[in-house]
Amino acid sequence: MTDTTINSSRPRVLSGMRPTGRLHLGNYMGALYNWVQLQHQYECYFFIADYHALTTDYADPSQLKQNLFEVALDFLAAGLDPEKCTIFVQSHVPQHAELHLLLSMITPLSWLERVPTYKDQQEQLREKDLATYGFLGYPLLQSADILIYQPDFVPVGQDQVSHVELTREIARRFNYFYSPKRVVPGAEGSGVITEPDPERLLLPEPQVLLTPSPKLPGIDGRKMSKSYGNSILLSAKPAEVVYKMQSMTNGGQRSVPSDPGDPEICPVGDMHRLFSSEEVLTQITTGCRAATIRCDECKMLAAHSINQHLAPIRDRREALEDNPEKVWEVLYLGAVQAAKRAEQTMQAVRAVTGLSRDRSGVRLERAASSVEDAQIARNLASFKHWWDVPAPVLARNLRELWKKDLVPAGTSLKADADGVWITQNGRRIFVAVAKQDDGAESWSFSVKPKSYEMLVLLCWGKDYRVRDFVVPQKLYLAPWVAAKKQAGKNNIEFSMVREGGNYVLHLPGAPGIDVTDTEAGYQIIGD
Image (cartoon, rainbow, N blue to C red):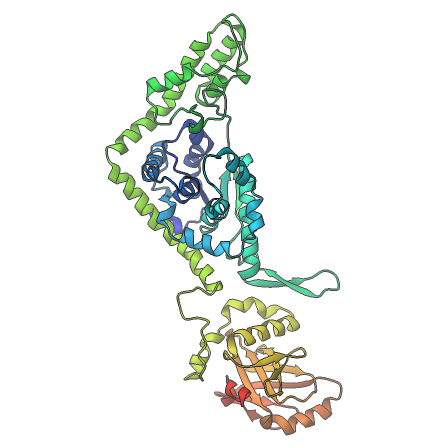
């Protein structure tokens, strides 16, 4: 197993299959054959969905492990190459279950109840009790399976496109809550709005990759399915293929050998179109329509074509059956590789849902031991896309962040007018916001000429760190009163300047005020 896929430049593809035992020709032509082709063009992750098997067969899991192994044998025998793609078992990568749980927190119940296959399968599998959370939630687990690898594409047939659309809806909802936002113009007259930044989505929406899904009937003419007893296994011996094909329906045509037929509407003709050469296809088409070939001869030719196609697959399977450790090794190494990629996604998801395994976002209800310590929670590099938003939007965003992450827990503040907060003692605090001036060690503020018992000055620097100065009125009262008179109805314009290692507040017409020691000085709010 190579370790190149985790940083591959190729578009990523993800798909899986439930372990229902040995695969049949319908499974092969409907999915597996396409996967073998895709592994040469894409960064592919293919998994065996054992969790999904339990959503319907939870009452008797005795055959699950055997079925899983049979599917793995067929994957490898059909041509999936662990040097070119990642092959693994769903439950061996625990991040699948973790993301499924987190997505269940945000997914409306009605979204799952409206999935068409939910009621259809309940109707088809009446003998099983499917009134379970696991069965209702299997489409959400399917979404987690996909989104955790952030694939570019999910290969499906035309009839499965709606399944991927639910995954896209869930991704949009998650990104709405948690992905970094950007500011865009709203509708006319509505100012600006925020929306998930499409360049920084935590769970990008996968696209559908339409793959060939040819018509491949069972021997009774219905869709090939083991539950119908009409399938031909991918691992079937040559004689078994001949026997099955001889019993295949001809669609009710040619009740006597002299009657002409039409291969276009005959299940045996479907088999020829998939497995026979052009020469054989021409032979049976002409012979059937002219009644110069018997149906048993046509079926024998189809069986021969199928056996020619299956011969190398059977040989590879038999070799793997003689070396089962090789199969388990592929699955083990595949799970290791898949878990690396899945963990990248989960680290980002845990961070935004408050479940990260580090100490970020935790505030101590005491003064920081140093300015450097105080800045740990004030590094806003992840919000650098705010730098170019309009000033009112920046002010709103930084004030929200200030209240949520910088003000010590338990501090009693009540929002009042825009930018104004009231303490439990009834004192007015104004929170002013500015980003660092171009080419200068300064921040320029513009504040309404009103009286405030305290100023909180949020100074966002070009290093993307925000410094928060909690300035009591006693430090600025006299120059502030003078500035109010001078400003009249205009805003008071003032600045914070970094002079050496100190931060100095400059109000109009007054000497500078050193406010360095007020940084993160929230203890005075409760005084």
